[in-house]
Image (cartoon, rainbow, N blue to C red; front, side, top):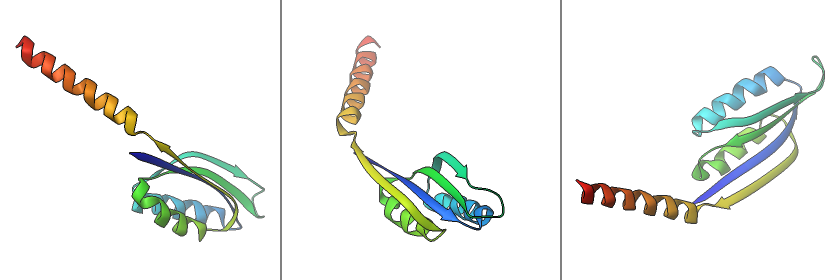
Length: 104
């Protein structure tokens, strides 16, 4: 199982509109904002920097939609293989179930 993450820095003159649209995009792609930072002064170009979390199969579409909200200042993507953690948790759960069945 791979967990993918993305960080984008967007610059926009219409911050409120971009923020509203970002929330709609994340909802559409079953995601959420992990962290949000705002820079700049009201009435001028503002910076919205967010850590966005969505299912791996939604990430590419979410990024494409999000990039339309302003000028991309920076972008970082990463992935984490959690297969071994999943297998370990699944194995432990199976062992607990077998133990409970043996006790009953």
